[in-house]
Length: 220
Image 1 (tube, rainbow, N blue to C red):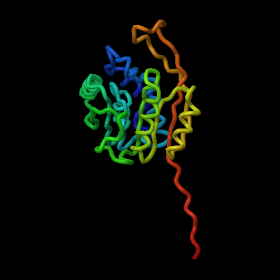
Image 2 (cartoon, rainbow, N blue to C red):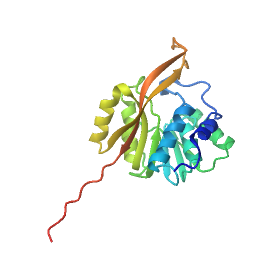
Image 3 (cartoon, rainbow, N blue to C red):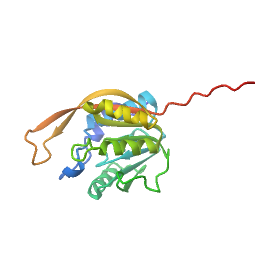
């Protein structure tokens, strides 16, 4: 079970610093505390995939998912992001919350598999990846990396409109996807080209796991 009530986790996450000048090319939208807390609480309370686990947060941004996982008792959380400015905020949030079980790594996860990242290195991988609005296919690059790194489960957000494609690609890569919830992701008017104050996007919260191969009994 989770070691902290969900509403308390959300309250903590509401205090973290987020992007002042998000970068449009990286689709930098912070994971809202309400969504992050529900994701993480479900991961721990329903599946036991956080407490005591080695967790990776891909495209960690300002750290809502990383810090939340640490608050729910993850053994160690490693955040990966291509943006040094985001990681500066990430580290400041960790310091402010006095969390010492997190570390951050600057890297581009869309450029193949770095030598320092091993196959099945993490128990659990969490992420709120770019949806592929600015660069088509980047969401699948993140998913492929996540499935490469996880030995237990991957939790991710994807546009509902891409559900069939996402689940099919995951199956091709040896994983089974289960939609745990359908969410309304409220994107604020963060960039100049946004015409509305905010826009709701339908998003799936998906858990990917690795079915165990059935062993056939040999003849005695």
